[in-house]
Image (cartoon, rainbow, N blue to C red; front, side, top):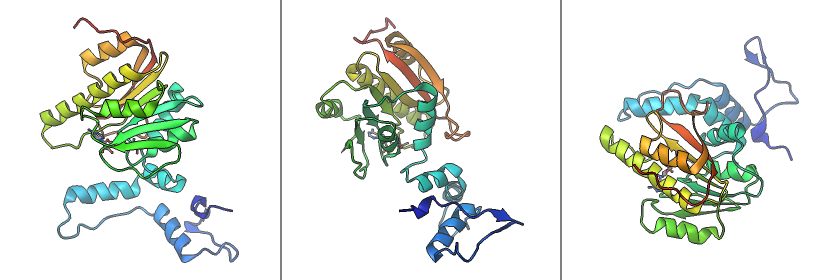
Amino acid sequence: MIDKRNKRPGKMSGGKPTETRRSRKTPKEDKDNATRMMHHKVKTARGRKISSKLWLERQLNDPYVKEARIKGYRSRAAFKLLELDEKYSLIKKNALVVDLGAAPGGWVQIALKLGAREVIGIDILPVETVAGAKIIEMDFMDDEAPTRLKSMLGDQPDIVLSDLAANTTGHRNTDHLKTVALVEAAAEFAMDVLKPGGHFVTKVFQGGAEETLLNRLKLNFKTVRHAKPKASRAGSPEMYLVAKGFKGKTQKSRH
Ligand SMILES: C[S@@+](CC[C@H](N)C(=O)[O-])C[C@H]1O[C@@H](n2cnc3c(N)ncnc32)[C@H](O)[C@@H]1O
């Protein structure tokens, strides 16, 4: 069966889409194709703030959002993991993967597509079921969260992924502290559960990880790199930290 969603718009000729009688499309397909080709401008409706108008406009015109919809990925973030994996060979066949901040499930889909045997994840928000994944709806900062996740693992994971991003309050300092706390908690969890040789990938903000955390990761992993995938918006302060080759029993730094 042909998946009609994967059909691209007809070739352009003289600025107009070509369409023969045999390739006549249903009104639904016409609408989907037109949606993909148009540049959208969103009218500022009464009551809609300029910021949400700009967000909506950016979403509608973002090529990664369009591609994610075509490929059936749940988020544009899926492309960030694909890029990171291509560059750093992160997810091996049969890998046991932990995904922190998993909703809506784009990274879960990619990890499984790359051959993971299972993904264990957590998010405050619900995640629609994905075959091959077990996701709990819980705050990762809850004291019980690490124990709950460990009880679901049954084995040491090959990789811990964290795309955790706190909801911003608009207060710079508060947001920074919330983000740092999430990254630190993710790193501690990774160093608690990873198998020797395992990897840890986390989203970080504002120029990379805090120095103390960076030093701790350098002590415990063979290589630590910062990366900014193309799919990560240029204007966004987010980047990723890729720590490869967990050395095993966690080393504590002296500072
Ligand atoms: C950028 S999104 C993750 C996108 C995901 N990687 C994907 O590809 O679909 C960040 C997620 O972190 C979750 N999050 C933020 N703080 C959290 C916390 N304390 N505990 C659990 N999840 C949290 C948010 O609910 C959000 O779904």
